[in-house]
Structure formats: structure tokens, C-alpha cells
Image 1 (cartoon, rainbow, N blue to C red):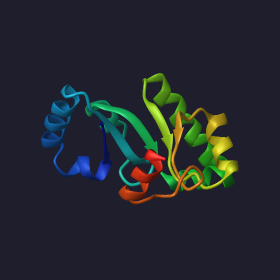
Image 2 (tube, rainbow, N blue to C red):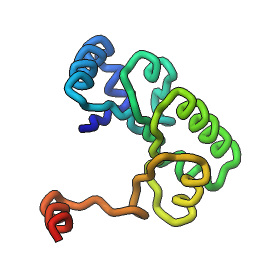
Image 3 (cartoon, one colour):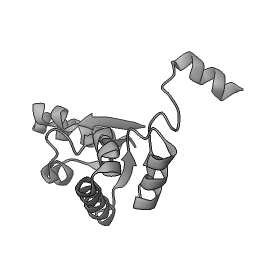
Image 4 (cartoon, rainbow, N blue to C red):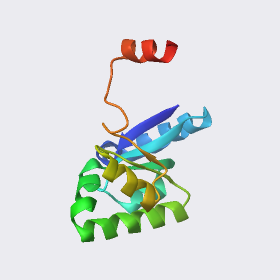
Length: 130
């Protein structure tokens, strides 16, 4: 099971979060750092917290398509994160162009309307069973 946490949530009570996330890891769960690249993005949180995956915020998914500087920064994040052993997901992928760019840049996974729109649990179960 994966638990997603934003850096804003980490900052609320760092000691409490560190202690409880480590307990969840011992039970076989993993921690995903969500919305990375916006808000309070910090290398410190990657060092101190038991994160296994980083989800790059949808803002950067859009910006890297139109702004070379944003693309360079995302490429740098990808390189550093992969070297450190993190899985990387790009959020907010809405079209084939973004999907292909994410694949070319080295993201492990993508998330967004291009893949699937959010659905209710009942719909998910129906699709799963059919």
C-alpha cells in the first residue's frame, strides 16, 4: 500500500510524521511525496523522510512543455532522483505530447486524464470485474 503525503503535511509535525511513517514502512507500505516542485519543495524532506517515490506536480507537467527553463529543472530533478533511487511519477498528463515527453525524459509512471479520468469506487469495481 502506498501513502501519499505533501510537503505541507510533513511540515505540520516533522517528528510525529517521521515516527509514524517508519511504522508504516515496517508493515510493508511505501511513502510517496506528492506535488513535488511546488510549495515547500525541499531536499531536506527527501533526506529525512522514508520516501520511495516522488510525484512531480502537474504545474511542471504543463510548464516543461512551453518553457525550456522548466524542462531543464525537471530534467535535473529526474537525474538526481533516479541517482538516489526514487521512482518518479509525472502528474497532470493530459495529452499524448505530454505522455511522450514524460517517457522520453525518464519518468517511471504518469498520472492524469490522458491515462484515465477519476472514477468512483463502484465504477472501478465494475471495470475491474468486466
